[in-house]
Length: 263
Image (tube, rainbow, N blue to C red; front, side):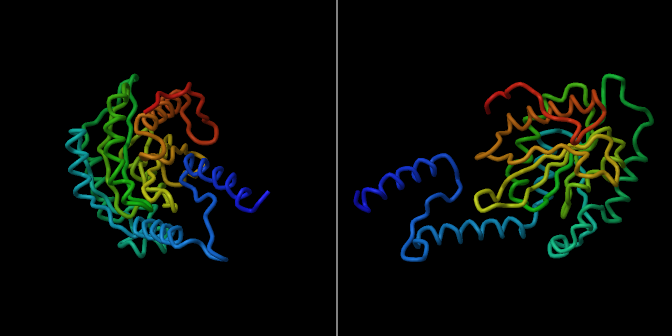
C-alpha cells in the first residue's frame, strides 16, 4: 500500500474525531513544525484565554442586568485583592472581603426585620464572582439565574451579590453574613484553549469561613458549547433540594437525578 493510501484513512479518522470535540486532533505537519493555519489558531486561542484571565468584570452593568431580570436587591462587593494583578498573585486575598464590603453586609444584616424563614423555606444566597474569567460571568451568569429562579420553590433569596476579584471561598463569608442556609457561587473558571468562557457553580451548605472544597458540590462547563442553562439549572435544583433535605453538600452528596431535559 502506498504512503498516500495509508494517510487517507488517518485523515478521515482525524476529521471524524474533530467533528466530535474542540480538542486539537490530528494536526497536520510541515516537516517538524505545525502548519501555519494550526499554529495561528493555537496562538489565537491562547490569546483569548489570557485576555479572559486579565479582563475586568463590568460589575455595574452586570448588577443592573440582574436587578432587571430578578427584581431583587443586588449588592456590589469586592474582595481584599485591590486589583487584578494582586488577585492573580495572592489567591488568599480573593477568598475574603475587603473592609468596605464587610461593613456593607453588616449594615444590610442589621437592617433586616427580625425573624426566620418558615419551615417550608430556606434562605439561599446567590453570589456572582468574576473568578478567572470575567467573560464567562458576563455571558452566562444572568441567563442561568433567569433560568433558575422560576424553579426555586421553597427558597427565600438573600440579596444577590456581585463580587469583583473573588474566588470560590468568598461565598462562605458572604453566606454567613447573610444568614443563608446555602450559598451558590457562580464564577468564571480557569480558561482553556478551547473554553475561555466556562462558568462554574459551587454549592455549599451552611457556608462559613473554613469550609473546604470537599464540602462543596461543583457544576462546571456551563456555556453554549458545554452544559446548557436548562441542564445546569436542573442540576442546581437537584443539589439544592438534596442539600436541604440532608443538610450537607460535598463528597457525601452525589448526583443521582434522572437524565436531565436536553437544553
